[in-house]
Image (tube, rainbow, N blue to C red):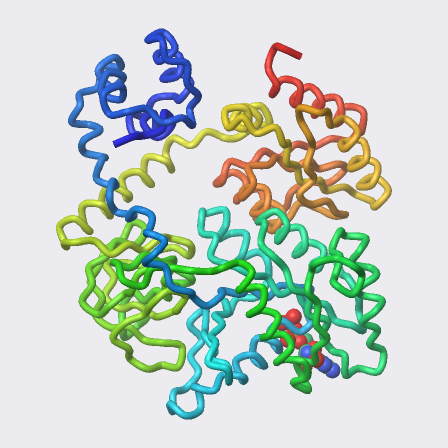
Length: 477
Ligand code: GDP
């Protein structure tokens, strides 16, 4: 069984750099992200004075997430879509309108349940899964937790309003995640609607829709008047086809928690989006630091179902406690094993809470260095638009052939929760020029180890970033 140096370091509660050093002395020049074999790992463990049982104990996790599936076992699966956009541009209305296109809902007599995600079956028989929490905060929060469940983002822009701050944030969050986007130009029923203007303004943000010669699909809709919905679903399906979304339905299920709560009558309940395999009543599972046995599965129409396959969202009953959104669920072979893994994860989480050091620019950068990333992600917030532009252009100028600054997001105003979740997901520091983080943002930054750096003089800011970038490349510069 191979393990990365960093993982082993975590399990031994040692610093990755110390392990690298020891390995170097043993004649093995590796980085923290490289894997080493079992024998070398054991050697290291002894070298550091730990006994072998200690890793054996935490080897608990091995095998919880199954191996990759054979190509022949893969079946097409429905796309998972998140709707983003500025407030009041019609995200919720569009989610409702799309829900209304479901041909199964009425006939089955089910009643719409808001469980965090739903699936529609179109007239053609094709299915689309929609995440019910619109907006980019939830999307990026999930991504920060390693849960990339969205296949396609639908960006809603109101044709009578244009690109607004949250539209731009949504574009940047989508790009940072590398998820394809479809632009839904909404409210075309309104007298002041000007879809062409939207297409033009999008160019300024590097979103080039098909009509402007690019490859981003766009569609004119009215969520209110239910216009253009077929066109939108067609485009979602086309994009899904390009992505060749597939999963093996015939295996123990793995999925992701979309939302979870403690229900008065039913106990802990989690909505799980199945990623691969099929989740069945009676299955034993571990989910985050909780475990359980599926007592019942309830779909988005409130009906009890016996099983849920890839891309299907279901409420799961029978959990030991409430997991977090973004937590992975895996079906395992026995209750003893489920409890063992859950207990192990609880102890890891406990240890993390008590030992996480506050982040600073340097540790953030050295983490990047260890990853050998030659891209330098940044989030930039400033007091006025002129400063934002000056900083972004200066930062772009200090990029070299070897290392390139990548501004994930920039904007006017204080540092918010949304900025921090975006930065955390990409392990980027946040640069505040003449602005500070609000209390909530500071709290999350602290929790997730995001560096917040404040400046009042552009020269200082550029100087420090340049130095950090050079430092990241090592002494050969
Ligand atoms: P959200 O904040 O992005 O979720 O936006 P909502 O879905 O709540 O919509 C905001 C407002 O815009 C509501 O009053 C909706 O009725 C209205 N609205 C949404 N879509 C349309 C549309 O296509 N046409 C018109 N005229 N109004 C719309």
